[in-house]
Image (tube, rainbow, N blue to C red):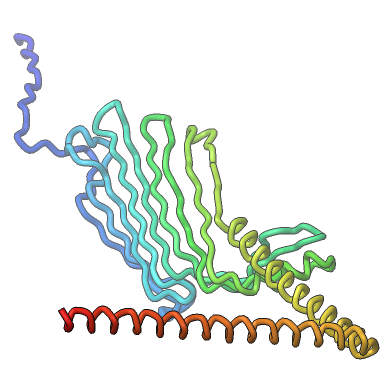
Length: 277
C-alpha cells in the first residue's frame, strides 16, 4: 500500500481577525452594603482582551456611583493601552461630596488639630507610560469644622482661629515609577491659618490699644481734676487764643471793608470824569 501523502495548513489573513479572548462590552451593577439604600455602582468594560494589537483598541473600564450614603458621586476610568511596545495606562478619578469626620490632621501635643466634619471634592489623573509614572491629585475640603485643644496661650488662640476656617485644599504631584513613586504634597491650610492668626492678633492689638488709651485718658482727667490750677491754666490759654483769633478776624474784616469802599469811590470818580468830558 503506497504511503499516504502529508498535507499542511494554509492560513489566510482574515479581514476581521478576532483575538483568542475578547469581551466587546460588559455591564455589571453592584449594591454597596446589605441593602440598596446604601447606593449602587455601575461598571462597564469595553474591548477587554490580551491581544489589543488584533483589535486595534485599548481596553476601557469605567465605574460610576451616585446617591451613596456618604458620597454624592464617584466616577472612575481606567484605560489600558498595550497596542504597541510603548504601553500607556491611565487612570482618572472624580469624587464629589464625600462626608468626612473625626480625621486627625496633627498629633502635636502642644497644638493638636482634628477635622471633625467636612465635605471632600477630589480629582486625580495618573498616567503610567512604560515604567514612568506621572500625574496629579487635587482636593478641596468644604464646610469644614476644625478643632484644636492645646493648653498653651497660642494654642487657645489657634483654637479660636480654626473655628473660622470654612475650606482648604490639599494637592499632590506624582512622579517616579510604579515601584518607587514620588509625591509632592502641598496645601493652603498653612497660609489660611497664618492669615487668620495674624488677623486675630491685629484685632487683639487694636483692643489692647483702645484699653490703654482709655486708661490714659481716665488717668489724665483724674489728674486735671485733682490739680485745678493746671486745668485753669490750659483753660485760660485756650480763652486767650480764642480772643486773639477774634481780634485778628475783626481787624481783617475792617481792612477789607475799607479797601472795598476805596475801590468803589475810585470807580465812581473815574465814571464822573468821563461824563464831564
